[in-house]
Amino acid sequence: MPQSPYLEDQNTPPFVLPQSPGRRTRSALREEALTHAPGRPVLMLRPAPVKVRAAFGSAIAYTVTHILVEQDGNGPYYVRWEPGWLVHRL
Image 1 (cartoon, rainbow, N blue to C red):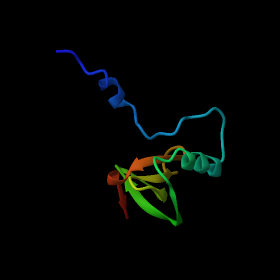
Image 2: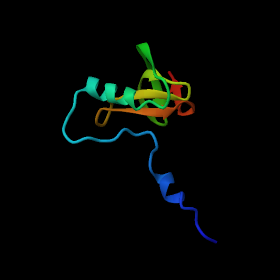
Image 3: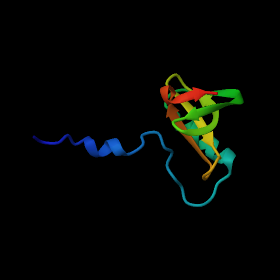
Image 4: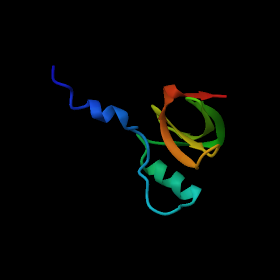
Protein backbone atom coordinates (compact mmCIF):
# COMPACT_ATOMS: atom_id res chain seq x y z
CA MET A 1 0.00 0.00 0.00
CA PRO A 2 1.54 3.39 -0.95
CA GLN A 3 2.21 5.86 1.81
CA SER A 4 0.71 9.30 1.85
CA PRO A 5 3.12 12.07 0.85
CA TYR A 6 1.86 14.05 3.84
CA LEU A 7 3.18 11.65 6.50
CA GLU A 8 6.58 13.31 6.63
CA ASP A 9 4.94 16.69 7.29
CA GLN A 10 3.19 15.45 10.44
CA ASN A 11 6.42 15.51 12.45
CA THR A 12 7.07 19.22 11.96
CA PRO A 13 5.32 21.66 14.31
CA PRO A 14 3.03 23.80 12.12
CA PHE A 15 2.98 27.01 14.18
CA VAL A 16 6.59 27.55 15.19
CA LEU A 17 8.01 30.85 14.07
CA PRO A 18 11.02 30.73 11.76
CA GLN A 19 14.35 31.03 13.53
CA SER A 20 16.60 33.85 12.49
CA PRO A 21 20.33 34.15 13.06
CA GLY A 22 21.51 36.28 15.95
CA ARG A 23 19.86 37.31 19.18
CA ARG A 24 16.83 39.56 19.17
CA THR A 25 14.94 41.28 21.93
CA ARG A 26 11.74 39.91 23.37
CA SER A 27 9.70 42.76 21.94
CA ALA A 28 11.10 42.04 18.47
CA LEU A 29 10.13 38.38 18.81
CA ARG A 30 6.60 39.36 19.91
CA GLU A 31 6.20 41.75 16.98
CA GLU A 32 7.34 39.08 14.52
CA ALA A 33 4.94 36.58 16.07
CA LEU A 34 2.05 39.01 15.67
CA THR A 35 2.86 39.44 11.98
CA HIS A 36 2.74 35.64 11.52
CA ALA A 37 -0.65 35.30 13.25
CA PRO A 38 -3.09 32.71 11.89
CA GLY A 39 -5.88 35.27 11.52
CA ARG A 40 -6.34 38.72 13.03
CA PRO A 41 -4.58 38.91 16.43
CA VAL A 42 -6.10 40.59 19.47
CA LEU A 43 -3.63 41.79 22.11
CA MET A 44 -4.44 41.09 25.74
CA LEU A 45 -4.08 43.94 28.22
CA ARG A 46 -2.54 41.69 30.87
CA PRO A 47 -0.71 38.44 30.14
CA ALA A 48 -2.63 35.48 31.55
CA PRO A 49 -0.85 32.47 33.07
CA VAL A 50 -1.51 29.35 31.00
CA LYS A 51 -0.39 25.75 30.67
CA VAL A 52 0.43 24.30 27.23
CA ARG A 53 0.94 20.54 27.27
CA ALA A 54 3.27 20.19 30.29
CA ALA A 55 4.87 23.66 30.11
CA PHE A 56 3.78 26.88 31.78
CA GLY A 57 3.77 30.28 30.11
CA SER A 58 1.78 33.46 29.54
CA ALA A 59 -0.87 34.12 26.92
CA ILE A 60 -0.23 37.54 25.38
CA ALA A 61 -2.56 37.56 22.34
CA TYR A 62 -5.18 35.42 20.67
CA THR A 63 -7.08 34.84 17.44
CA VAL A 64 -10.26 32.88 16.86
CA THR A 65 -8.38 29.58 16.75
CA HIS A 66 -4.93 30.18 18.27
CA ILE A 67 -3.27 31.71 21.33
CA LEU A 68 0.14 33.40 21.37
CA VAL A 69 2.09 31.93 24.28
CA GLU A 70 5.44 33.15 25.55
CA GLN A 71 7.58 30.88 27.71
CA ASP A 72 10.67 31.80 29.64
CA GLY A 73 10.92 29.01 32.17
CA ASN A 74 13.49 26.26 32.15
CA GLY A 75 14.69 26.82 28.62
CA PRO A 76 15.28 29.63 26.18
CA TYR A 77 12.67 32.35 25.74
CA TYR A 78 10.28 31.76 22.86
CA VAL A 79 6.96 32.98 21.54
CA ARG A 80 4.72 30.54 19.70
CA TRP A 81 1.18 30.35 18.34
CA GLU A 82 -0.57 27.33 19.88
CA PRO A 83 -3.97 25.87 18.97
CA GLY A 84 -6.57 27.05 21.46
CA TRP A 85 -7.59 23.56 22.53
CA LEU A 86 -4.05 22.89 23.82
CA VAL A 87 -3.92 25.99 26.04
CA HIS A 88 -5.47 25.89 29.52
CA ARG A 89 -5.78 28.98 31.69
CA LEU A 90 -4.52 28.63 35.26
